Length: 215
Length: 138
Image (cartoon, rainbow over all chains, first blue to last red; front, side, top):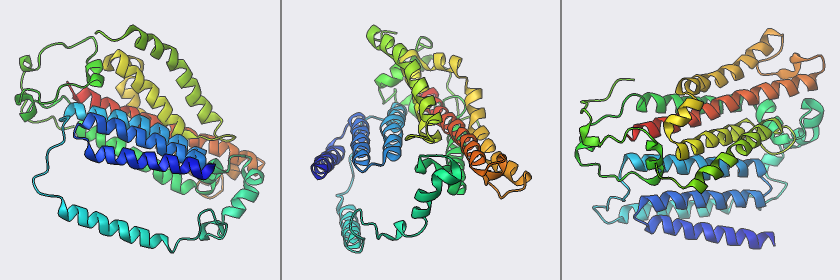
């Protein structure tokens, strides 16, 4: 039964991937990638990795989709047609895929308890977690206590990403080339909602700004 | 703004449950699935949903940009500060056992504080990134 569910989910993921490749409208692509994340989250649930599934569903399907849509409202909604045939890219992708598949032959069998990762400290975590940390969810105790340094690093990564985006995008919108091409991008629904109750001033009426403000 | 009445009412009904769920994921993460990261993202998703339906300015009145930007480093500071506090109390960096007379209790307290730091940074960052992108489009 579990194998069947996995088969169905993975097949659907493959179908969604083909859809992402074939679609030219980027709005649909953003939605499809959200669906892909939800399918992946379902796979994680089948694998009993509920914490990871929760993260995948909220980050991959939720926040990423919204950010994709917000990005689309700043750029164009159609994919730019490629100028040359994708032979080189196809070749590289095929070679990489074959290498990866070849590498899987060396992996230990799926779910085998003899995997190196299970023979190091995992047993100790499982046996001692409640006693040593008083936290029944071993995922939490490993993340926050045993591997606290790693998690601190992850938080710093998120912090850095946030600071980077704030520095890049803070300040008033630049009215450069994009303002002049007549708003090539129709605002998407989300963007229209964001316009809210204020500022229905047409774009061309606003003063043009040369260059962005340094943040 | 001509947005569906049903959409607005539904979102208003959903928001409190999203917040409670975020807090549940945060504080029940020791016992069930979840933790600071997931809870932070859910809390940010709540703010983003509010902004999508009621407008960016309305969301900024509830959760000002300055607060969000303050939260981004605050969580890291709290996390790293817990480590320094452990050193001050005579333990290793990020070894929470020194926080209470019984090591397990200290560990529990430390994990709670550290997860709170993760929550603050993650929710602040996610909201800040969304504010930046959304505020740019006009």
